[in-house]
Image (tube, rainbow, N blue to C red; front, side, top):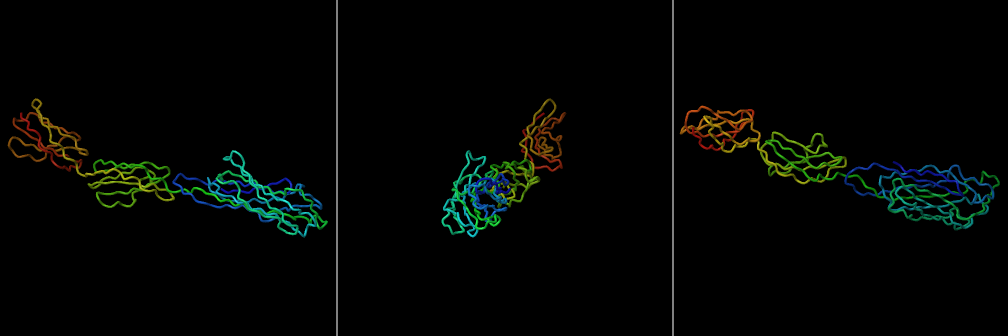
Length: 377
């Protein structure tokens, strides 16, 4: 957005203008303070020029229209200093008398929705000599420090503080035009917040299920993410793992090799990435199935029932049997899928023990359990 100097004036020998400063976008991110400078100036006579008849007085309503000026300022910029310079000029060849000693005053007023009452400051350009083209010049600091610039308007008015009779050297009124004008500069120093990188996520959590790992972390508004991994005692990877979509605050990995893993994440935007999050808890991946505990065998009527604990990720189980003093059988007795029990009925009398392995759906079976108790029928 731009600030515009919008002039108007309809009072005695004056110029008046309004400076309105606008807004630039803001972002939700860690910000840094920077400084800037804005200058509004007028260094040439206005158009049309002031027109004077012979023997006019300064108190007669005379004014010139000044063109619009502009200045860009960021949103939420705050004034640190304002300097106002003001000079009054006259063409001595045009005038035969007048230009008495006096004060030419530039009044600057500031108002905005953030100010309970308008602020006002003045600059005086004191006429010091009859023969000088420059009647006077002055620069002051205005009392506007700490004021927000967005939606702030300045009103500028230049006027002679006393009444002076002026006589033109030429009787032709056209020759008397543009005999006097003013220069002014309003320089504004300000500070503003520059959008920066996001804050780091405050927490991150990892969980393992079989050979898969799921990770989630604290969301950060408007951010995308990158994840780094530490595998066993190796060095951390780069932040090369990006969720899909990149703004998602979670990520999963599957079919991982056995081992321990830790995770951390950075939040990013167009200005860069945050500091790393805290390190996650350690998760352990075991690609093979676990080993069941020793089964429990029991007799119910003429049926032997064997139970064992569930193994996470197992599809079914296979058992080996030791009958009396014989050797253990091969692992060929399969349970129904997704069950942790098996039974046999109408068996011959004798003593039996059981061992069990957990198996995947593809038929890969893992370590055998310890032997069960002995059951007799």
